Amino acid sequence: MGILNALSYGGITAVIGMFIVFLGLTILICAVKIMGAVFAGVTAKKQAKARAAVVEKPAAPAPAPAAAPEPVMEDVTDDSELIAVIAAAIAAFDNSGKSLVVRRVRKVSGWNRASRAEQVYRF
Image (cartoon, rainbow, N blue to C red; front, side, top):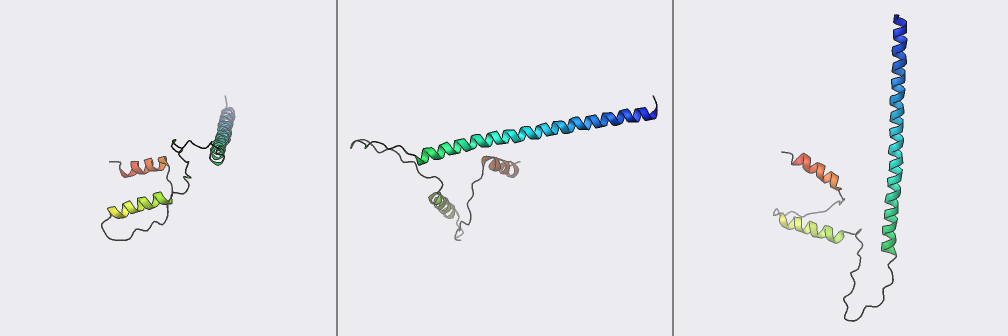
């Protein structure tokens, strides 16, 4: 077996190996995109169902005079009262006498809180 045969055999093996790797990566990319589309569809259906349940409240018959009123579903998108209570609690806890101004409120997912806690309270 000459040097040219060995080089051609190695080159063919390398090309076949790269083809298999890129084929596998392409299959993985397609699988991830398909799963993303499926999960997005499931999430959209759940959100639509939740919106329909909140928007379309069935008409309830008039309650009897002795019956307690049914609890009303509150809109949880407006959290201004909750923000005011939290800001007041923080201001009451702080003894510096400075005024507290809430400039921005954003919700943080559990994963963000967990990673922050892991980095801050590591030791």
